[in-house]
Length: 161
Image (cartoon, rainbow, N blue to C red; front, side, top):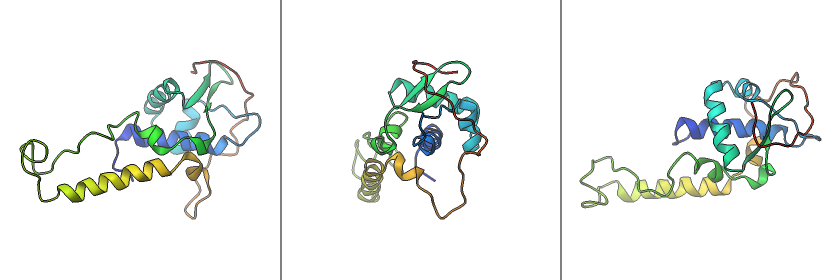
């Protein structure tokens, strides 16, 4: 549950799947279909976010059979903010729940300071947490990749699937 849109949520989920595979040697390339299946995500949405993440340098890709995606950096070096900022305007002023004539163009609404605090807390959370945090085991139900996902050798290229 996040206050961000579906694309941000899909990107975080997809990259968390790759983060779980990141300690394998050689790295395991996962295709968009495999990533989607591992997190019960729609394949078209995964393909779309993976293109954006690849262009931003957060994932590397290899085309063709045996290709797919891997993290371009260690999971601990990719903050949630690095991901979310590709799909959201984090620094932009929040929309006022009282309407367009408040906050920014008129007087501050009664909730302005509280909403600004929430935005700041959320942004700080995104800065402080990385994909390494998401790859750790949790007390909840395991949602790891099935053991049947084959390990793929490293291939160098700039596009996948």
